Length: 400
Image 1 (cartoon, rainbow, N blue to C red):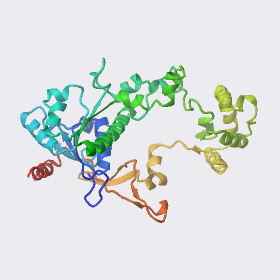
Image 2: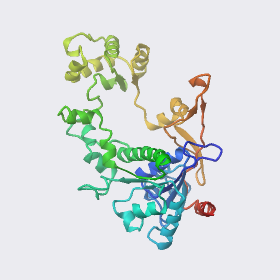
Image 3: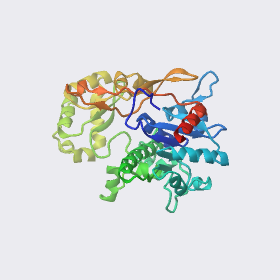
Image 4: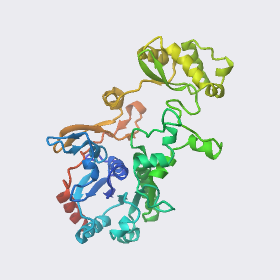
């Protein structure tokens, strides 16, 4: 959790994290980033399975997974065997003192462990329960196990991604898991706000299927309203042209001409007549996209990326490079936004982690540039069972 001298918006909230792998841990980590105390419950033998996912592995014994480090900052780890009577009793004690419980078991697992929703709310009527599944907790396929790439395919995302409809690609990040975690965290925030009025906690449900379907946006309405099935189109926007990646003398850059004014600036820069019938409107440019891309790349081939990015910036046209991750994390702009945080790990020492995507500021009379930013300090992802004694002491103090 955040250190005591830097409080976040959820500093009075306790989260019991029974989840593992990525979707649930990511949701709980987001709540921890907001100041909640997050107690991660792990099995004594090996803990969260993502502790063993790699490479890369780091540390003196090369046994610390960087995958695990990505989803478990600002948490405390305690080991519990949920299948034992003693373990269930401990979890029940923790439930009584918690505000939120996060789980991403397959449908029915909590019931078999003796912890159905009814029992959890009997123990603590104010408990908000976040349940993340693969395809939903009910429905004809509600019991299916959920894995990111399978969900990307089943939810249609792979059909939108790749160089052509014949070559569906997965998104490089585990986007179904991560979106489910994001949706889950904001659902929890809403349920906690509602609890202030009702005094009761409710169950928040989402799934990998729901998370991906929930971001179809204009691709979804292209079908539901327009009757058109969208398909993969490589690195070019489905509806706006020109908007995508283009080759120049030394590689690729990206140009996004989202309106007619920006298109005319691009055309002037590249020596293309913007008034010719096939390019005169976005509808025509989209219909002749392959021809336009070819015309643009012939002009772009005359110079390297640095030249074109500078010229596009001068013209006020949105454009950018395609950065590798090492370039992203060493970029001054990334660091200026708090997207890299330093933590002290008990084995690895001082390390850097990807930071939270939200910033909170207190408004200042001098304007936004003088706003007081809360510079939260973060804790490293815990070793397995590292906080067992501290959590038990905290629990006993709460029970007094």
